[in-house]
Length: 306
Image 1 (cartoon, rainbow, N blue to C red):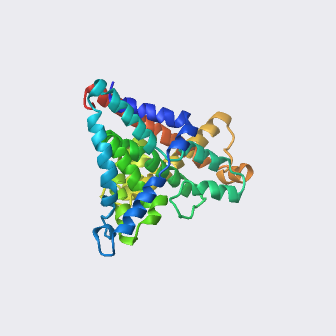
Image 2: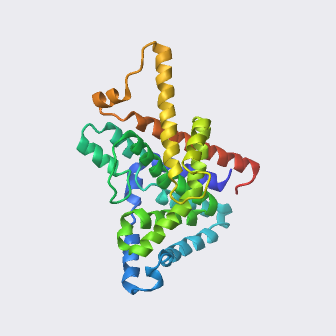
Image 3: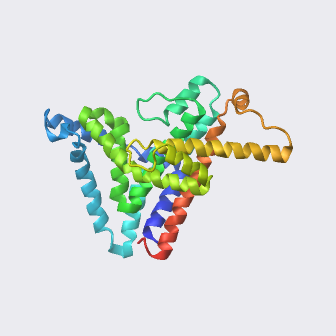
């Protein structure tokens, strides 16, 4: 069985079952300190202040991880590399638990607590929107940044890819982004969008496989998914369409089984305080992740993944 698949599965299970350990380990204050130190050393007009200045901050930690990755690849029949991969993937995953954040939002019973819970699904400093469609987009955007982006670049480049993606995401949208100047921050966001684009396309394909293929394909085309665009807006459109289709199918099943018209979505929201879209969004995210792991397992069996 592939070392890559084992590392991905173990890191995923650990992150889900050992949430207290994950919360205690996944701290990136050192990265903000590192960016602050670099920023104090470079004057205006230097490469650091330019669009691709973030590369100065990325190269040293990623070079160190890459050297460890190469050094541990062979000893003990690759066991050292496996353990190192699990550690780095576990560290780069998240950093917050998506299931817990979505559950907190779904169970919020008043506007203040709902806004507080929703803010955890938005980038640092952004104002959360509480309508169902925006929350669905937030769930999938968070899944892209917390799960699928890290996993994709880990599968492609190993530990250096997983950590590299996390550091770029932190510089573009996390707490560390406060340490970057205008052009450097813009470059970090452009780099993150480049890293996200193939991940968003593959996540869309997984959604088509676990949901309604025609609905996903239509939303993807209408949102410009067939052309190269770094805003990746097609993922939000596909997520909305997929969840809307899921809710419509559930309503149809309810009518067929009970013979009674399903209650209006707005009534359910007012009486229970719940957002029904969140349940289906999270279900689609998990099913998409299982599709990714199943495809990876097929690649392992076929011998395409080491």
